[in-house]
Length: 248
Length: 256
Image (cartoon, each protein chain N blue to C red):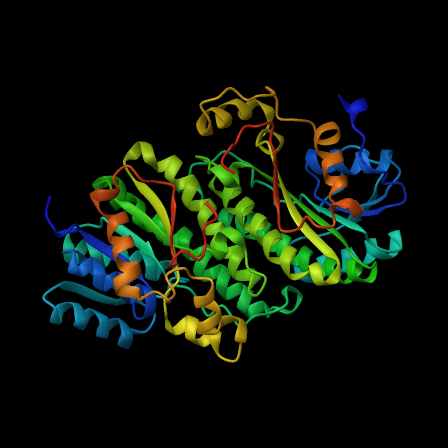
C-alpha cells in the first residue's frame, strides 16, 4: 500500500510535531524519512528514535510551550507545518466517568485542552513569519461518536476539533490553515480496544479491519494538508479512521 | 399523558438567574417541575424563584457558583432535601465569553473562566447529579452552542469549551444509557445578559448580523423558544433521545 502513495514532496519542509505517543512518533518519522526537517515537542524523550530533533516541552504551562516553540523555530530556521498530537498522560485510559476524580480530570482532560490551546497560540507567530503554513490536529474519532469510558478523550477530541475550526477560519487571513484529522480510536487507545469501540458506534464491520498505521496511512494525509494545492482547505475535519464512524 | 410534561419532577437549572437559564427555569416550572434555581448571585436567583412561585409553581433559590465543587453538590443536596430527589440537571451557566478576539491575545482569565464554567462545571454537575439521576432514570442536559459544532472565528475559545461539553455529553450518553440516564445538549440563540454584553461595540454580533443568518428572522426568546426544548429533553417525550444536540437558533445553523 505505502509504495502506491504519491504525497507531495516534503523535502526541506520545516515541521513541528507534538507528543510522545506512538502516533506522533510515527508521523514524525515519516516526515524525517521523506526529507523534512522535523522538531518533536514532547514532555519526555521519545521511546524510539524518529530522527527528529527532540525539544523538551512541558505542556503544563504556556511559558514552557512558548519557549519550546521558539527553540524549535530557531533550530529549524522557521516552521511551515505544525502537527499537534500531544495529549496528557492517562487521557486515553479506559475509565468509567464516576471513577474519575477531580485531580485526574484536571491533569488529563483539562491539561490536554489547555496544551492544545497554548500550542496553537504560540505557533501562529512562526507560521506567519514563514509566510503562512498549516496546522493539523490529530484526534481520535471518538470525539465525533462519543465513547463509554473514554469521556475525557472524547471531551478533548471535540474541543480540539472545534479549536481547529475557529482558528482555521480566523487565520486564513495570515495564510495559515488549520484542520483536524480524526483517526481510528485504536491508534490512541490501543489496537486491542479498537474492535469494541468500533462495535459500539457502528453496525458495520470496520471496512479495513484495522486502525491504520501512523506512517503509511496517516502521515501522507497530514503532509497533503500543507501542500499548496490544499490551501483552500481550512477549518475542516477529515475522518481517516478506516470508515468506522460514518456520521458526516 | 398530562399536558404538564414535568409534573412532580425536580430540575436544577444552573445560571438560572437570568437569560437562557431563567427562561428554561420558567418553562420547566410551567410544566409542573419543582425548580432549583442555582445562581451565582442570590438576588437574581431569588427573583426568578419568586416569579415561579407567583405563577403558582414550586421553586427553590440556592446560591451556586458552578466553578465551586461544594456549591454544585450543595445544590443537589438541597434539591433532594426540599423536593425528595432530582430528575434533571441542566447546566447552563457560563462566564462572560469576552468580545471578539484574536486567539493569540485572549486574556488568560477569559480562557480560564470559560474552562471553569463550561468544562470543569460540567464535570461537577454530572458527577454530583449522577446518583440521583441513576435512581430516577433522569436526564443531564448541557447547554452548549452551535459554535461548539461549527467553531467561531470571533470567539474561538468559546467554541472550544462548548465543543468539549458536546464530547462529554455524547460519551456520557453512551456510558449511562444502560442505566436509564439520558444525556443531551441544547445549542440556543436567545437574548441574554451575556449576549448583550458581548455585543457591546462589536458589529459582528449586532442584532442585524445575527438576524441575517437566521431564517426565522428573529433572535430567540429564552422562555418561549429555548425553554420548551429543555422541557422536551427533560420529559418522557424524548425518552428515546440521547447523545444529541438540538440547535434552537431559528435555523441559523443547519450543519447536522
